[in-house]
Image (cartoon, rainbow, N blue to C red; front, side, top):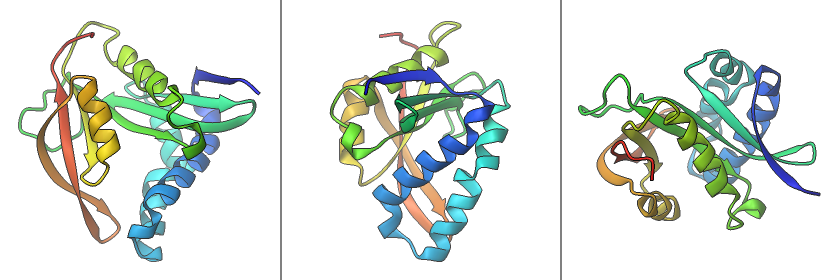
Amino acid sequence: MSLAIRRANIDDAGRLSRIGIRTFVDTFGHLYSDEDLQTFLHDSHSPQAYARQLDNPEYAFWLLEQGDTATGYAMAGPCGLPHADVRADDGELKRLYVLPDMQNGGWGGRLFQAALDWLQRDGPRTLWISVWSENLGAQRFYARHGFEKVGEYEFPVGRVRDREFMFRRFGSTA
């Protein structure tokens, strides 16, 4: 079966929810109590949460699909990171999730590029990304694409506060 990337729409809220929950639980679920994990998943990965963002023109999603099965996605929108240098017109790659069996085949990079192209559709601007402090692979990936670590903050998952790094790349289309 072939793989394809397409822009998600409001009808994809349930599919995005399922892939978001699966990838988050598979990757990070072991770090949290069930209560903290369920609270976070309800607040951040429910179909309703995705529908709200899909209905907002300031956000965009791209689905990686293998036939009718979602195997990854990217989400982009205005930067909401707690850094003093964030400006109103800055963009952020908010999520980039790909199932493990789809990793290292270039598909994550294609999702990443689709999101960055959309963020820069009106011209170059400063782009931001937030990465869990222990996700060294993602940090190396973003560094290869010109992003530099510029700060850190605490990312809430239920009652847990994860150490999260903020990366920035100034207005380049490279």
